[in-house]
Amino acid sequence: MSASTTAMSAGVTTMSASITEADAAACSSRSFEVQLLAGRVEACAEQIEAVQARLVQLQLMDWRSPAGLAYRSKLRVQAGAVGGARDKVRAAARALRRHAVHVAESALPAAGGC
Image: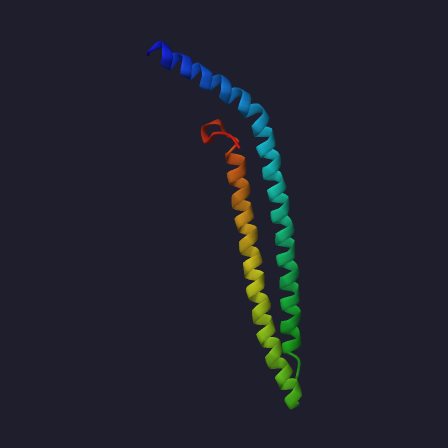
């Protein structure tokens, strides 16, 4: 191993050690914040699911009049739209969870810091 390679290796090791301590803590904190955000988004998805369930309950009521049947039809459309929104919010929460993992992994020295 040449002297320049040894010096470069020592410099990288020293730099990685100093970056790792401070940046790992910062990345860990950022990862935790992203996890908290994902939890809040998941809670929103649960609330949306509750709204959808209520729409389905209303839809199942005994509607006999033409206006009631038209209302049931509209409820079905709205329940479907709410279900689509719920799916998108869940997908956003999953993306946030994955991002939190990537943020945490970026604190590793091999990943080059946060």
